[in-house]
Length: 235
Ligand SMILES: Cc1cc2nc3c(=O)[nH]c(=O)nc-3n(C[C@H](O)[C@H](O)[C@H](O)COP(=O)(O)OP(=O)(O)OC[C@H]3O[C@@H](n4cnc5c(N)ncnc54)[C@H](O)[C@@H]3O)c2cc1C
Image 1 (cartoon, rainbow, N blue to C red):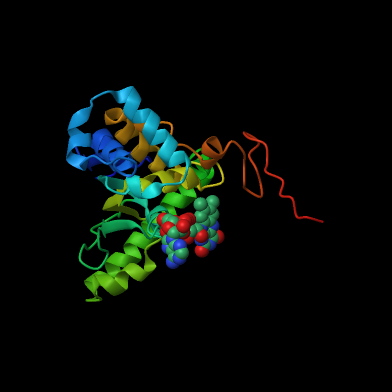
Image 2: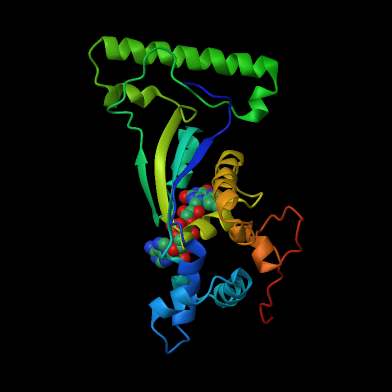
C-alpha cells in the first residue's frame, strides 16, 4: 500500500483531560489542597496555561510526564525509523521484517533530492527493482525472511505504533524540528505534532524547534533563524 513519499501519521490515543491533568500536577506542588479538589476547582484555561508555562519554563518537567500519547505511523523509511528508535523514552512496536515477508516490489521511500531528478529517480527505482528480485530469489530458495531481509535497503518503508509521554514528545520535537535534523524525521515529527495540536492547541508553543524555546541557537552549524549562542569560556 504505497502512499506518496510522505509519512502517514495518525494520533490514536491521548487523554481526554490533558490540560487539567497537567495543571493539577503543577498546582499540587504548591497547594495544601487535595489534588482532586484542585482538579475539580477550575476550567479556566488561561489560568491553567499561565501556571503550566511558569512551571515548564522553570524546568519542572515531571508535571508533563503524566500524559501519554500514541501515534500510528506508516510509509516512513527504515532510515527514518532507525533515528526515531534512538529516543529512549518512547515505546515502539514496528512491522517486523522477520515475520512479514515482502511480496513482489517492496514499498520504499525516495528522498526528494533524488525524486526531483528524473534520471537519478529512474536509476533509484531500477535499483529497488533489482533488490526486490534478489530478495524474492532468496525467499523462493527457502532462505528465511529474517535472512533474506539483509539485502533490503534503508529506503524500505516501515510502519510502527509509537507511544511516549508529553515530556519526551516535547524533547523530540525540540530536537527533530530543528533544521539540522534529517528531512524525513523532521517531516514525521512535524506531522506528529500537528496531529496532536489539532486536538490540543495549547501545546503549539512547546512543540517547536529548540531555538524557539531557548531564544537562541545552540547548534554548531546554525541555519541562521536565531543567533548562535557564544559561550563564555572564561579565557
Ligand atoms: C541533528 C541530529 C544529528 C544526529 N547525529 C547522530 C550521529 O551522527 N550519530 C549518532 O549515533 N546519533 C546521532 N543523533 C542521535 C543523538 O545522538 C541521540 O541519540 C538522539 O537524538 C536521542 O536524543 P536524546 O538522548 O536527547 O533523547 P532521548 O533518548 O529521547 O532521551 C531524552 C532525555 O533523557 C535523558 N536520558 C535518556 N537516557 C539517558 C541516559 N542513559 N543517561 C542520562 N540521561 C539520559 C537525556 O536528558 C535525554 O536528552 C543525532 C541526532 C540529531 C537530532
